[in-house]
Amino acid sequence: MSPSTSNSALFDAVLFDLDGVVIDTTELHYRVWEEFSRDRGYAPTREELLATNGRRAGETLRAWFGTQLSDEEVEALTNDRERAFHRLLAHEPVVAVPGVEAYLRSLRQAGVPWALGTSALAENAELALERVGLEDLFPVRVTSRDVTWGKPHPEVYLKAASALGVAPEACVVFEDAVAGLRAARAAGAACVAVATSFPRHVLAREKPDWLVKDFRDLPAALRPGGQGLMAPTGPHP
Image (cartoon, rainbow, N blue to C red; front, side, top):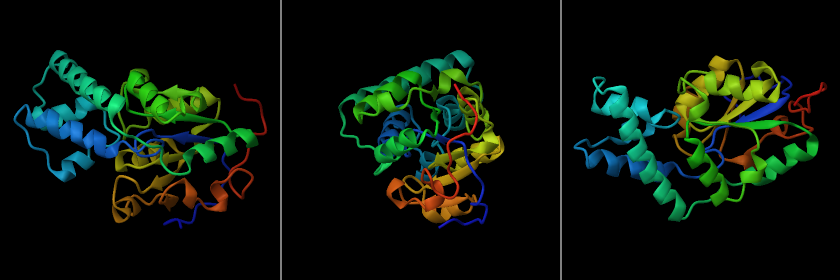
């Protein structure tokens, strides 16, 4: 059920975060961050690991290792961290979030457009989708290389909506992270909190329009042809 009552609006498009929404890689990210930071003399707390969700890697690096890091140092460290994640992602067992593939196919059948909006590097997003067999279901993607600002800034969702030719206010966003929910709100979109990464009570504090366990737990308003989710009446790219 939703912590709010604003679930009567009509939506023309759906925007998805990647990690924790489409693919269950959250703990893999935490593992990489822990190993990466400990090798460099920093031991993150669980709360600090949670805060990495939805954040660009450079923001986390400066938060943990100091704002004095130059842009060149941040870029080098980011590349090291992302290569480490890519290596694990290529070999470790990973699965799609339950129900997401069936949901995507139902959107396609109903003519409802969707896009990916993620803080991940483009190559990691591609590999993640390939690992769970969903790469062909996300032709429209906005990744870290397409934006200047990380979540909670709304840029990634504003650009994803624009790529679909839909106003952000006519979109509903699926997010698993606090920063991502705030980005969705700042973009003017409705938002669904997926409780795969954060405790439900933490997500509930952000007042999402809906709070669900996964895509098997969706109310009728979020299903194509239901009360709220409709194919757009006008043409879109």
